[in-house]
Image (cartoon, rainbow over all chains, first blue to last red; front, side, top):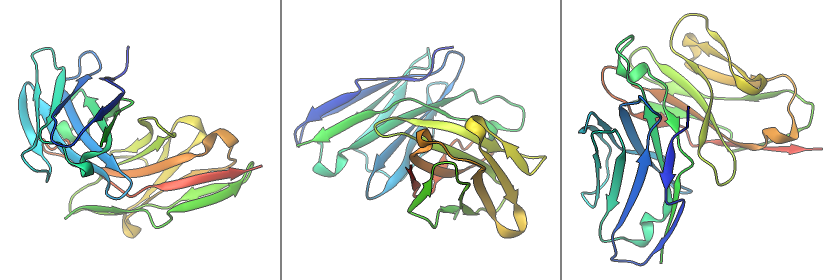
Amino acid sequence: KAGVTQTPRYLIKTRGQQVTLSCSPISGHRSVSWYQQTPGQGLQFLFEYFSETQRNKGNFPGRFSGRQFSNSRSEMNVSTLELGDSALYLCASSATGLAGGPGTDTQYFGPGTRLTVL
Amino acid sequence: AQSVTQPDIHITVSEGASLELRCNYSYGATPYLFWYVQSPGQGLQLLLKYFSGDTLVQGIKGFEAEFKRSQSSFNLRKPSVHWSDAAEYFCAVGHNFGNEKLTFGTGTRLTIIP
């Protein structure tokens, strides 16, 4: 099976612009989560989508949004970019099977999108 | 609130030496625990996970971890490290009941010296 893929791998934007990142989960996986990784804050949960619905959300401003399509692919959008949004954005997918509850599923991570805001 | 603590920011070990990376968690219910490894510029790769059952968990690349409920710990071990093990290691706790969020520790950077 192919792993989680993220596009683009690298992105450079300027302050005030918006950006869209894409994530394709492992085939058959229905849950997609997004994380932001920075040297100062570490790995922080952004949000999680399951069956095209946002199921969980972290503590990020409304400038950060996402969506999930019927094929489970997900996009993340950041509007009005700030310098502090420079980070590695990681996407993870899981099967979210019923046995043991959804939270017991392992999340598999993609390689990330490195966003630099100038 | 749930949290994960990795007390060692940076560890240096000699190639061939044993390794133990510490992880302590705070979580009200039964924890689901993970160790991930991240090489420079890469995403996270799962090393091993603990959901229930045997408290000694075997993972990939010769790693193992032991869940100790009494100490709220899930330390990662390897009997003999290789230069390719140099990376950053993250401990994480997963949440159940429909919450897919992982809460990560701050990571431990491992340096291997010849």
